[in-house]
Amino acid sequence: MGHNLTNIGPNINNIGPNFTNIGLNVVLKK
Image 1 (tube, one colour):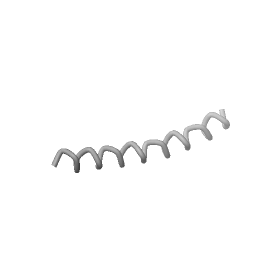
Image 2: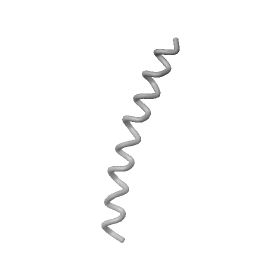
Image 3: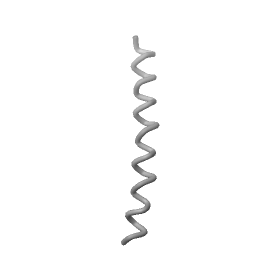
C-alpha cells in the first residue's frame, strides 16, 4: 500500500498543468 500512496503524488502534480490550460482558455474567450 505504501507504493500506491507514492503514485498519488505525481497524479496531484499533473492537476497543476490542467488548471494552467483552463486559464489560457479563458484568456482566448475574452
